[in-house]
Image (cartoon, rainbow, N blue to C red; front, top):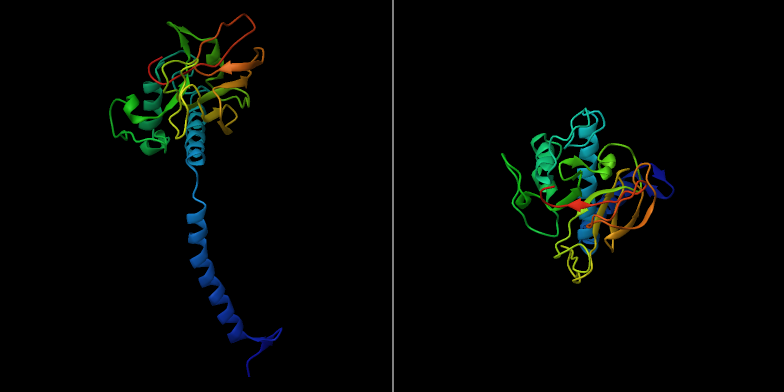
Length: 227
């Protein structure tokens, strides 16, 4: 005699479980197809992963991100060199450096060029000197310091900004921004609120323009190539 549990025999219960499992297997892919992960979310994941790699790098470099040595001296100021440290060190795979919004050449070995990555990083120099904004090119959990993200593909950082993302209008930028506490936001403008280290809060910080800096002021400036 089959044992019954709340009106079901064990065999009937097993059949119901199997049928439900099959339905789940069939339905989940359909739900995924209806709700694919958006390009902006995929991009955020990559930008956050790269920023996390900066933090991992810093943990063996006295809290400094690539470009500085443990004595806080500049050793690799360009974006290409800094990406090289991360890629050659195996902090992330080469495809991670490329936005899902565009096609690029994946780095394999040797020199890194802008053909191998999509993103901009904080400019850490002014001429041959260390920039004040470089105070944020280190591990410090500052939630209002924008340190890397999507580049500007427009002709300048003012009225001619442009984004690599689809449906972007000339004169408008949108993209992923990594903040120094490792959270990432997808912004609809390149002008954001920042506060770097001990300096005053900047309510309208243009990520792609080096604005005037006073003794108590410091702003973000992202560069895509060189320094």
